[in-house]
Amino acid sequence: MATNSSEKRNAKRAERRIKRGEKRAARGKGTGKTRRAIGDFIVKKRSIVPNMITMSNMTMGFFAIILAGRGDAKSLAVAGIMVFLGTLFDAVDGAVARAMHVESSVGVQLDSLADGIAYGIAPAVIAYQAYLSKLPSGASMIDFGMFIALIYPICAIYRLARFNIGAEEDDHTRFNGLPSPAAGIVIAMIPVVEIPDFLSVMKITLTLPWQAFIAIYVVISLLMVSWVDYSKVFPDIYRIGGKPFLVLAIIISILAIGLMSAWAIFGFMCFYTVVGIVLYVIKLVKGGGSKVSV
Image (tube, rainbow, N blue to C red; front, top):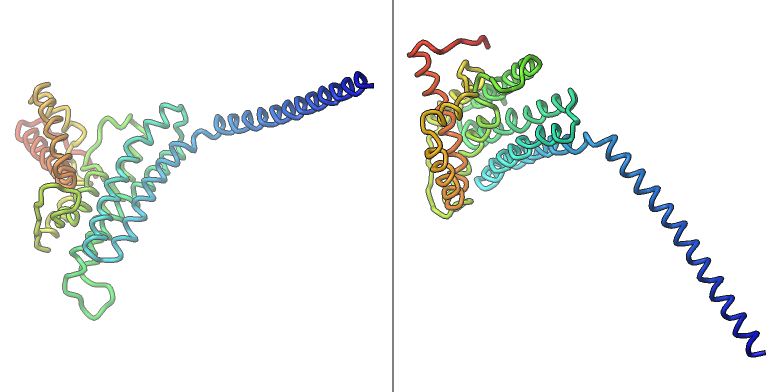
């Protein structure tokens, strides 16, 4: 009797083990199918990755507009940083798309629309709230500062449209006019460097009169639709200074970012803007400049 009971218990245990194994196998098949389905979806829809990066650029611009609307100094400074952060996403979305072999006309249009918000609208809103809203206003709800603020987005959107048309004919290695990300950073970072202890170990304060800001604002706007060939700035600098100059510039940049992040970003973009003008004037004087219709 004891032997029969033991055999029955062993048989039941074996039966339970078999059932557990069958359940695990069934779950494994289900999990495998799910994983394959997710993998197939990622492969088919992998273009969503660079598009999400592009939309992150737009998101930074959108947040910058909302923050700038608050009008206080800290919100304007954070809005300026948002515009800069957007450039980091803008710098990698195209490279990711090429690496994943998912370049498309949709991605190009998304990138252009995101740039229009992040570098066309957001910097203008920041500029208006920080400086241009302080200009005298008449009886109308639309004041004089709004008309000045409008100059920048008109130039930025026009430049993006011109750039898109040129993109159909070349590989983006040649372009005229100050790139909208650089222009957006110059304008949006001015309220940031006005706060001495904001993202900077060294407490340096910039006090910019509204007259000077308007001059900078208009010049930066017009540079975006100018004939200045900014695609040759870095190659020309490297040709003039050589490899030692490049290494020194990298070391100085790292130290500057560590000590005064906001000022380093603002200073680098101002340097890039001014050098482009200087190199273009030198080429014109030497007879090597060529005009491109805007």
